[in-house]
Image 1 (cartoon, rainbow, N blue to C red):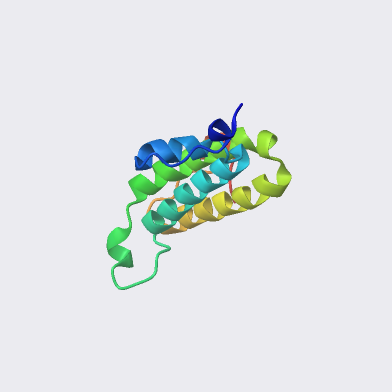
Image 2 (tube, rainbow, N blue to C red):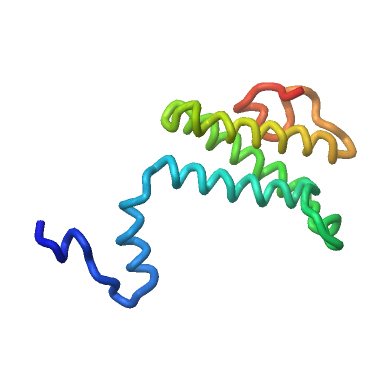
Length: 123
């Protein structure tokens, strides 16, 4: 492999340039970044945002979907990324699940909340 193949120059096409660089990003970093995006969005939708319009952003149906997707990701990825990375993700997920339960006017039965089919009941 010559030097140009190892260190390609930017083509000027932002999408093409990002595709060329993605191969350098470790899987654990991509998984963590994705999980943080899910967590952030779910936190806003469950009512953990701050600011004058925070209450207007609450959407428990959307929060349920995000938390369930996060639970699937964290549960599936945990054996691959190791406890050093999975532990904080599990903690964040559990906090979101508890916040959802607290925000819900009609809390789900234990084991039926968002993501609990992957994580088990959260108390």
